[in-house]
Length: 324
Image (tube, rainbow, N blue to C red; front, side, top):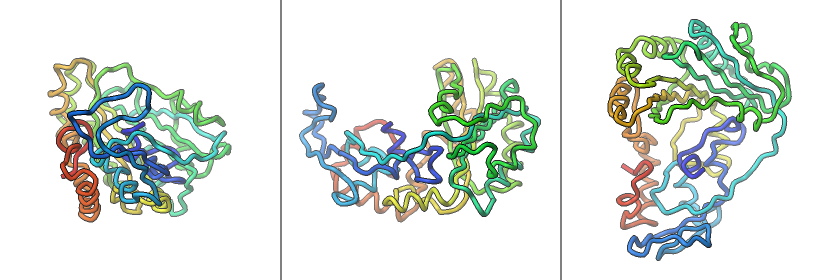
């Protein structure tokens, strides 16, 4: 929950309500950590230190409310979240699977879906392509936030023959509980974003099915590659701005979040797996916050200087992306 929220948090509701971080009404933050007296009291839900605990919201410490929304753990220890919620019960959705040879048709449908000028914010999807595992092939998970069978926004996908189709009227809980979790212990995730163009999707298909790095990856025990493509419309940014905005520096345009995930079995293969995919994308060692843009970076730096002038969290907390 903490990493999802402080990192940004994409969901099936993002086109309507913004990212997960946009839906934080209040952060409770522990400031000015004294590492010599740092400890945890099991009777309380908060982490204790010789510092102050403050609330950060639209009225109180609004800069500290904005900064962790994408800025991560660079400003204090977030001890609790107060989140806004939205009433949603039944919807339409499920999984459609395709053979790998249908990938060009699916990518073509993705472009048509994303470039529709009348984007319906109730519609969302994630496309996963298992280029190293033809038995799984192409997996499309789609969700429409109303109980309407075969809604119009997904029309470009309907003519494509499927291997499996589980779409039906159901709840989000039922949809999520049916998701596949591969039984592989080690993963490495990568990410970038781009605008939806047919030529670019064709280029991605070529790289991710013919790149020489794939041979090195599949030579590892249980080595495999899965591509995840998550389309977002301009409404994600607009919805977030209505709730106070975030630090991500996103443009209000239609875009695809592209996430190649690699998996393998043995810890001794970690370096080989990471190096094999460097030619495909970037990873945990990429400058994430540096890509938020100069305006956002400067504002984040100012918040850091105000609330953590000694850079305790920058220097001593090992996890998360640090300010450049």
